[in-house]
Image (tube, rainbow, N blue to C red; front, side, top):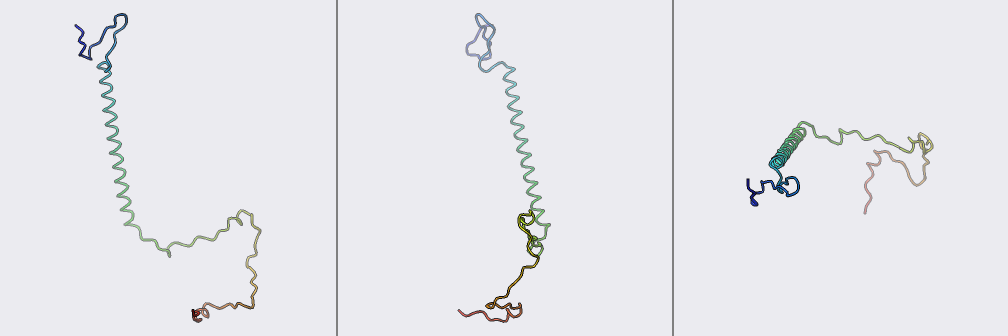
Length: 123
């Protein structure tokens, strides 16, 4: 077989060493690169398909879940309990259960009924 310089598939025989292959590699190497590329392409298509399935299922579940739930109002949610983290940690000394109120001569306490009967001040 004669050497054709325009055919990259031919293998050159070095003058003083083993046979060398052209830049594109041997036929087996080209087939292996093609297989790896096709496998990578198929894997990416499958990953994108799986992501699309997951996103559409999550969207459907989110839409279906909002229809089933009753609206939450402020009356349904109990107020959070009063917390004093410093007292729970023992940093603050114990305070008396009921604070002592000292009446002053300038203020008078009104019941809620009396406060409602008082007209608003003029401006």
